[in-house]
Length: 522
Image (cartoon, rainbow, N blue to C red; front, side, top):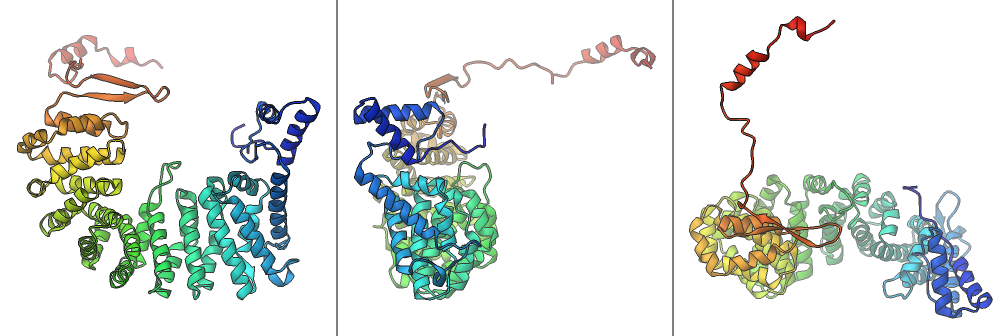
């Protein structure tokens, strides 16, 4: 029945069946495991929480150690869900050691990391870890346990979507962000946990924001104005919370989250972060601030704030000074792309030198798909309904840089899609540019882009606008095979001329009219 949890068996039960196959039916190790898998799957049992290799003494000992660690942690949680170190049956050092063991065994570098992560779900140990976030009383031991717990949860929620969806301790996290605000180490660790646990998880973003998450992040920025770790993690959190990245959901709270951050004064706060990154030459912090700025630019009011306070000009300065840094250039172009939704701002970018710097970055960092996507997207936005901007773009060889980016990333669909949109906008009101684009080889580039489902409509439209023959490529969802429809304009549509003016309709109504008493019966 849909909605029910899948049936599971314990590792011990699986190992026992393998052992029975080997001892009672004289199967070889590989055959015994294969038969056990087949048996359980035929019964509808999911085995994603099990180690499906041949059982060994070493594997059994490792698993026993893992279960002992989870049991030790569970013994520290009281009936009301609280964790008081003076009442724990084990010392704080033992708790920290157990958390480290669990973290190591669940890490992506562990051979059976996915198995142990699944075990944390099946034996509910993930909830024990969440309870440990409330460790008390405050002090050195409690801080050590808290930091080890946060690290464990960060690894677990990063590597397992199931564990991420199980994470429900956002109220406790927000409480900690307030009560332990004086500690930069703990604040930075908690923000890193928020960043990881909310990425690709729309529900978690909602839980965090509803429990006061935006205010907690702003407090962290204010409390640690010169700590690059805390500030960087805060920017990462803003970027995650204001971005739609959970495609399991049809709706996103990203837009509303951005507006809430704006009301709390995030734009001036990011300006301070950016200034710190400039004064300390901390390019990674600058990138974090730019990425946060980009996702905040969701409406004209916020865009105007970004420009008015000087964030955009700082971005321009940073990009010019660090043209060698592809990551920073990609982040800066992301800001350019989003603020170019404003007609005045995008026209200013075309004339104040920003366009030239952007195109230079696109030529310099041809290997970066981020630079290519945001560069193509910015050109598309600049050219939209602005013929004069198109002239600037062509005068700076922007069309050539655009096609260069598309050629260097032929299989990166977002690059191809943005490139096709840019081509359409370049010639929509500047028909005289068709010949120049044709000489640059635009036809082949667009036809190559049309091979991908995510760019086929844009490529087809651009080819049509340029006057080239083209067919729409469709993909069968079941077989994955390409299906080509007929060429645009090959077949005349057989429309029913129901809108053609005619006197016949009045005559037919009169002929078929009947008295009301013949039409209505009582």
